[in-house]
Length: 251
Image 1: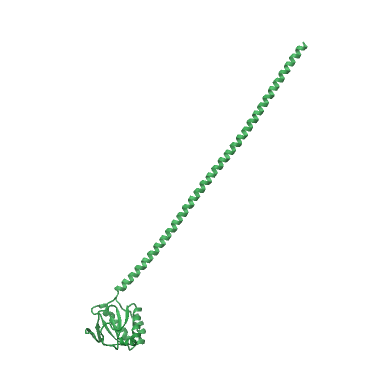
Image 2: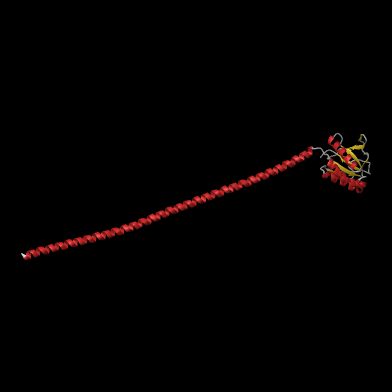
């Protein structure tokens, strides 16, 4: 009986040992599996974290690249707009300069046209100035010839006669040409067909009259009346002892 109980007890103990071993093995397996799973989970977390960080980094890089492209594009657009504005300013300035030059040219042309259309004359102030300039040559004899039938020319003749007489110059009759015309209380005047105002002297009297002739020509030119002195005679005149003033049509 005691042997039977021992057997039963031994058998029970063996079963307990087996169960305990199974439990230990199972626990070890579970622990190992959990460890493996934990390691795998940790690795998965690490990999996932690395992928997320890399993805975020790539997104940030793409954003920065896109922003740099945008900034470059905006900068280029601004630079192009500024260049266009400067070019427009330059074009506007050039156009304004061209317009100003054109206006000046037009004004000069209008002035010249006005001069061409305006009669030759001398204001009272101009006459006073010329009288003072010509007084040093007082006593100089002169005669006159004019283009008949031209009102502007005959009007200038009257101004010139009055001016020279006021400066002390002495007017005498025109001699030599067959065609002369008489005027009340004035010396005879010759008739010529010339252009502009010409001052002539007899070839033998150039030295004698050169200073007065040049002074008269310079004074008239200064006041806008085209005048040229000529040494010698272009028309027939028998007054060698006088300076010859020829007033022709306006140039």
